Length: 209
Image (cartoon, one colour):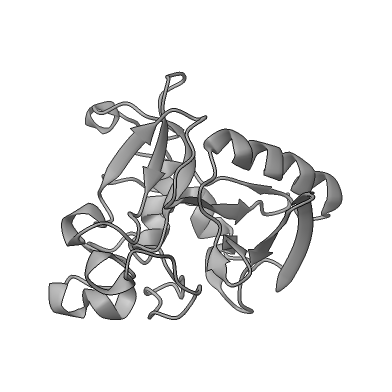
């Protein structure tokens, strides 16, 4: 997919270093980004591993509570924003941070090295924008509805996905995938109410006007 994402080019702002919000009585999720990390894209984690086993609908409830309690505002990235960030700012990268299959183990947790479980955020190398875990560890929900042929006729400037649908897009692959499933171009669509191990999310901090 080739797309220009003006919003990301303008919004190179790191989020707060750590913000905790209780979602229910049994779990606390965190929005985390390291100081100086660009784009305001932050991974959400439980403890120090990415949150998984959450649906797209769960993420919307989390965002509602997060935005009600925070002066900063957050949302899911569009699919185009996610890919622009994963490809180190739109570079031609097969995986986030590298085109070399022999070096993929340095950048990603996936089937050959993950041991079929999630791993601590930020323990592999970041991509060219300083973003960690854009490839592997957990699939990441995006804002867009899924259509298999959407990018055959989508706008070139900041596409936001189909106006409606029955499935939402996930990107990035997870700890149980082989290398071809964690490519930056790989996309799947699932019902927004589906939960499963390996399904997580990432947030964009909305730049103030």
